[in-house]
Length: 193
Image (cartoon, rainbow, N blue to C red):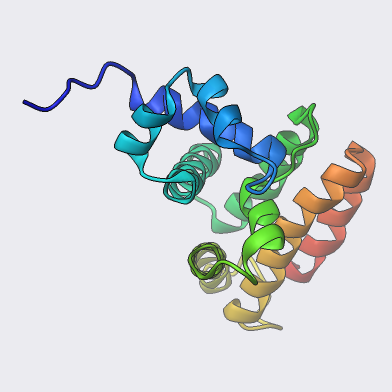
């Protein structure tokens, strides 16, 4: 008879995600994970596989929760142009609340591992394409509704927006200053006029 699972999987994922986010993949040991989650090595291995499997679950969990939070933030308006502006305002707020200055787990993991870990590289590309698609959809709708000029294609603007959106996290790690971040956003969004 299989052993009954006696832990909350989401709580374990939250704790492991926070640890990987703060220390990086290579900086996190199995001992760190057992301490953070309260599970034994065997429970971690039996429930999540090896460290890499757990890490990938954490990345997926992180991206899903970030996407949900972003969509909740922009749900207050039906205007696609306002959705873009709210997304950037939301990102600045997230950065300013990041007291540990951990940045973005996906950006950090991409920098740390994408050239040596194909699975992380594929997920980073999927995340980039997904965010670009979201921005492209909003830009296209804004252009069709006359909220935005058609100087650039929706795809070109979406690439620019994603690059700036991700870059904000890096800038915010180095200098989490509202004025600096607002300046970056203001210039980045000036292409939308």
